[in-house]
Length: 217
Image 1 (cartoon, rainbow, N blue to C red):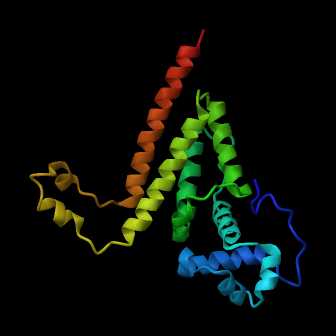
Image 2 (cartoon, one colour):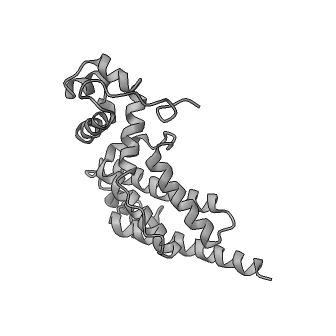
Image 3 (cartoon, rainbow, N blue to C red):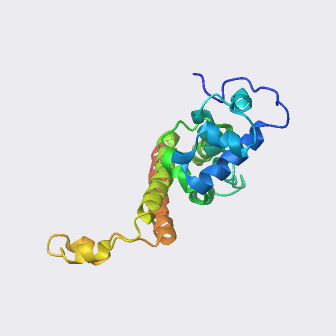
């Protein structure tokens, strides 16, 4: 498959480097979001021509892939000595924090995460789960990665609609939605994420222990 990661890296032309392009792209995305990113606007911010920019990246998709992988590069890898639950919690928590620092990233998480930073962190998660004895580390990693990405997407999109009073709407319909009227759909995002992650890790540990006991001679 051909993408920005598989093509040979070209030597810098003048003072423009791929690292500078990515840093400026992340800054533009942080300020204005993914919809406003164009190659022309990025070239203007870099004070260069589009031809020079295209020397390093072929398309806007290349820029988005590189910028998203730079976000993953902000996620600190846990210490190898940590237990699997502590390591998973630290990695997933750091992953969430990085995505939330760059809300535009939530809008492009449907892209293949094939950059070196994303793959290094996914590799760490797979190794951690494999070493812990999970029978299906891919399924376990899938559960954790989809939990963090889904929660970030929900938080970013929900916070864009903060002016909507869902609580009042549900209370007015308590006869039809009694549980929702009591508990609501609004969140204290950090606490809800941590509690949900705790449920997920506890269930995974139960499944891991059951498999280990069943596999014991």
